[in-house]
Amino acid sequence: MSPGDNLLFAFGSLRGARTRTLLMMIAMSIGVAAVVILTSLGEGARRYVIGQFSSLGTNLVIVLPGRSETAGVNPGMLLGQTARDLVLDDAQALMRSPAIRRIAPLSIGAAQASNGALNREVVVMGTTANMLEIRHMELGQGQFLPPIDPRSASPVCVLGATIKKELFGAEQAVGSWLRLGDRRFRVIGLLAKQGESMGMNTDNLVIIPVASAHQLFNTQALFRILIEAKSRDMIEAAKHDAEQILMQQHSGERDVTVITQDAVLATFDRILRALTLAVGGIAAISLSVAGVLIMNVMLIAVAQRTQEIGLLKALGAPPAQIRQLFFAEAALLSAIGSVFGLVLGEIGSAIIGQVYPALPVAAPWWAVLAAFGTALGTGILFSVMPARRAARLDPVQALARR
Amino acid sequence: MIEFAGVRRVFKVGDQEVAALRDIDLELVAGEYVSIMGPSGSGKSTLLNLIGLLDRPTSGIYRLDGQDVTTLDDEAQARVRSEKIGFVFQFFHLVPRLSAAMNIELPLILAGLPPEERKQRVTQLLQSYGLADRADHRPDQLSGGQRQRVAIARATSMNPLVLLADEPTGNLDQTTGKEVMNLLEKLVSKGVALILVTHDPGLGGRAMRQLQMVDGQIVSDKRNQA
Image (cartoon, rainbow over all chains, first blue to last red; front, side, top):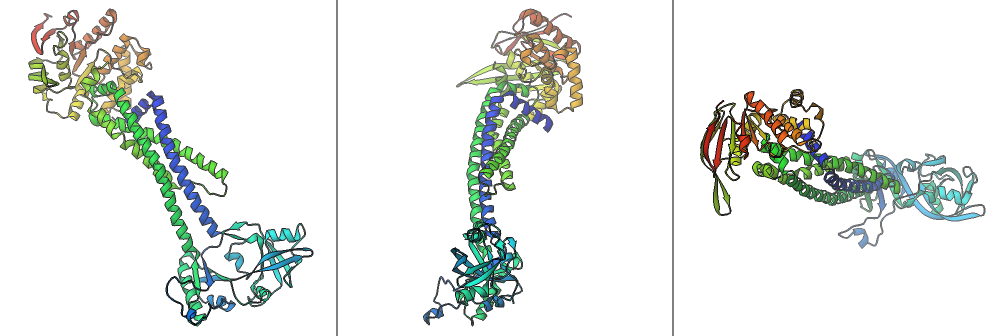
């Protein structure tokens, strides 16, 4: 018997018992759909988090002033010294590293902003032109900070979308003057509305050159230095260089903390991937339940088709052939069930995608493959026993029954 | 062609051993038309099952077409069944979900014949058994006589050496029974050996050779004068 005939015959017997076939396929497709939907949810969550991180910028290394030691005593602490401030010179010095593409110093403060009678407290961010690229900000109108020497102050500012709306309303903001504390700044650009990303809302920001911010807040200290490494592979080198350079700058003292976004990202990535695997595994249990169901129903099929099996034997079907027929039946059943399940899963994922548009739900290819494989595997595995029982049937007994 | 030497078949019923066949010695030649008669429980069906390789003797030797088939494994026996033996049953044993044509094709499919050849043979068989217009009907859409004709067509589809018929008319009325017998006897005239199990002496008497069985033994072996 050729494999094609084998499948055809199995298909025939499946069609011969419609209710049974339908119920088994439903069980199978629910199992497969569960795997697909749950893994696509997990994968969606993972991609969402990664998306959030990369909206912060890619290949980011961040320098924080002060050092958080988990063990040992900083000699500076014994002498009553506080950590040295990060200053603009430090930021400039970082450009010596070949692994670093660009840097943006960051100085943060709060100030009263007013336009005529409208005024409100705003977060002022002092930085340089590089910030736009490093943080992947989008400009809505006008231009960003000019690429001037970071040490020179310039009375210009860029406004976040919310600030613009609250202080200028429908008025033309670009070209107007904005009062920040006791100084005046000309609005040269507006940020596009971006919303929250990782707890930082650019809509509520006023961005001015870092030197101007230092004048405004009467300080030399930087809040952060953002570094963009030249490539993903250079991140570690950039981190190492930054630590070395800043140690030199700070007379040999390690008093800054350098973190890479990549490390944080990798951790999240691992956690969420494990989570996806876990929920996928739980869903796979429902698949194996479907497998047990297949076994049960196949056993009933063997009992019901005793006569047919006896006949096939009398017509010259060897035991191996009978086994193959039942395998083919189980394989077909689980394959068709899985296809329905995949379709069902995709539909389910699409619905979830509609309900939560922020979540990029899509079943990863490996989950689809695994679901299909598991379904087929359990189907065939659990038909081993019924198939063997069928193959061992005594044809005399099988045919004697009426 | 069929040779039984000291064949015994013992069944275990609980603790007791029941001998269904006791030391059967039998020789049938190719193309012979033999009827096996006897009361129920006399062992005639067991003998038929042994000839058809559906059952194995407890002891003794069975040679089919010169080959000792008792020592063959299941696979090899299945091949012998497929190539040399055709069965016709009292209850037809057609696969209910398959059409008449598909039922006839079944042994050919199992034997792994190429589709073109299968199609050709099935068409020919449907034609010669007057079933051409019933090809696509399922067994439940056929009359008893038609069903048995499908079964005979199926049994002969692989051109067997011997046809084993267990009460082939047992489930048919007289007229159709006679038709079926005519069909079977026509096959004999074409050189196929026919072994007919029946408890109807009228039917058994038509055979060229008549075996009478009682209690697992052949008690008489008569031949009709041709």
